[in-house]
Amino acid sequence: MAELQQLWVQEAVGSMVKSLERENIRKMQGLMFRCSAACCEESQASMQQVHQCIERCHAPLAQAQALVTSELEKFQDRLARCTMYCNDKAKDSIDAGSKELHVKRQLETCLTKCVDDHVNLLPTMTRKMKESFSSMGK
Image 1 (tube, rainbow, N blue to C red):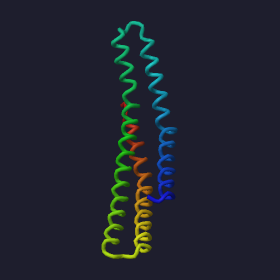
Image 2: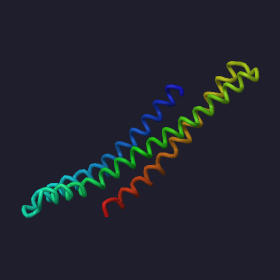
Image 3: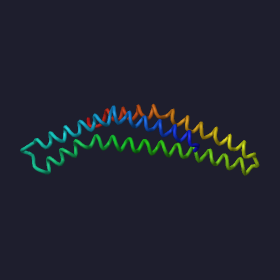
């Protein structure tokens, strides 16, 4: 993928992750730590009960982090498939005898479209993750 498009994708994904971390993950971390501290305050609880309590406190955050990781992997896979399609199309054009300059332009156009299409998916992806976060731990 062209460097400029790659930077744009990295910037857009980085911005989305920062936003999720600031607006959602940090709050979940705070809740998790306060919940875990409350577990430790239970003087009548056994060590196993305290451990289970802390695990329950950690579950929503772990789910949220797993969701972000999974969604980012799916996003990367989709973008990689689109990029591979563009590369295959360019190779097919060269094999069919198209001029190199024409093929380069065609490849750049295709890659730009891939990046544009996928970056435009980020707001919906973010919204869906935030909706999922709000139901975690309830």
